[in-house]
Length: 131
Image (cartoon, rainbow, N blue to C red; front, side, top):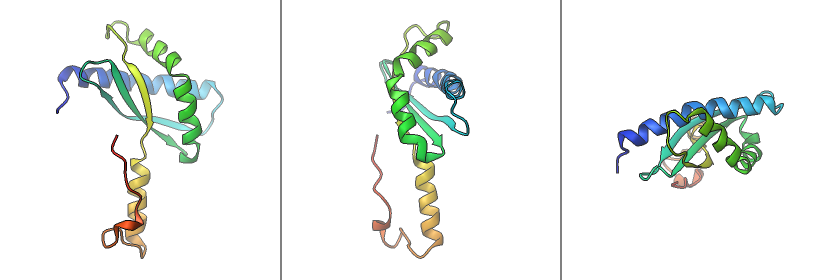
């Protein structure tokens, strides 16, 4: 099912403000050399849940950082509510996920350049999970 205009608008507002909140929190927390980008935000039909996909560079810090972000989700939601109070009536519940699509593309690219061709033998690549 395709997203409604309202879902798309709320997703774009959340995505824009989440970048500022997360990057600001990272720099205030003393995390130097870490780049957090919000690659996608998907809002449910009833506008109650927003799935936020994050790309974190360097990727080896991603698991620890996403754990910290999930534990501080209520504070992030509060900060977002303050920023968007004139645009949104209710703030959706935030769920955070790591977006590993760039790593997956890079792995395919390396495999195609090397001797292990995933097109001929798909067992060389990890199976992707639908989320």
